[in-house]
Length: 490
Image (cartoon, rainbow, N blue to C red; front, side, top):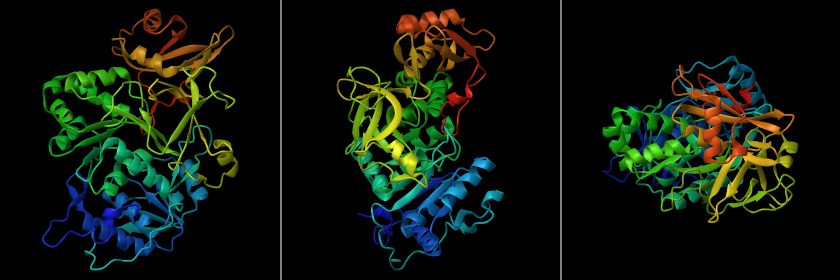
């Protein structure tokens, strides 16, 4: 089966007398399947011998045409974040060695891309009169090389084969009852798995459509959901802003009604605080569902459309995905109910890190399990509860293994807390002490540290209370809304 069957002949062209079915909409610019197929194939012809291509991944139709063209030509695409700094961008270009960069005609590209052949993407092309005859590449051939965030060193390029993209999107079709009738709304960046693979290639594989807001706004969400959108994808920052808006005048207005009418509200890329779950559910009667994935694994788990939307969980493993929790030494958990590291195996996995055989070997066990570095517990019915990253969110204090995530949720239940993050710091008595980083709801009157500690102790248990509280104006976040805990220090 082709990776994007709706763009193949004859499905990519409308039947005689039929309007060109919408594939993409960015603001006022709409592109149908026939036009997208024609533009992508014209570009694919130009880059067929390129080896690898970089894509200047702005939130525009040109990025979509560029990626689809690369997929049609069987040429690996390297999406580039336009906000990437000079040094990191130079590393990515040197490591991935593309010969060509694809960009919109008006884009001003940085010096790090000056040595590449530039090809401007044209979203207009004459309709095809016959198939251009691109053969479907092997399922194991690389589709995309997506660079990780580089929190523990220079970014690594995860090589994602066509097999992994197809397996993930088909597993989500099964879990979310995703069809060609769905209209997806989102405002996610297009250089990452969430926005590009799930948010763009997902609808295109199903034969549905996607409406990209360009820039997130609650007004844009309401407008697109009210005018035919059936699904909303977002990150916790977006849903937090939605929850905030629903607490105000919008609660009885169009936003609440639009969200209530959506078939599916999905949050990902980081944990959605339970407090925001409840605020949205109270205002709309609809619950946000979560899923869990990584650059290297694409999607691992998800709450099903017909399942229970249980705040604090990311659902059960998707079809075809094996998941287990292990101790630090890789052995089975001594206590099945305790915290363990998530390992996954299945067709959704990457091939490896580009040019990094040692890193690839370190990430995979001998029998093919990927070491995620994420810590979790399992509910009795298989739902996964992620407590955080092994490196930054697992706190060992007083002989206990404590997940930062549950403490953050408890803090967010306090009316004086707007945002919260929890880290561990060395302590001569406890091993590590729990530190809470708090953005107060009222900066002029932050809740006292002892009050917050007592609040957590009452909700969870005394050994999980923060021993230190530090107040901030805002938490440091990356482009996907994830809190950058390595930037937090005393």
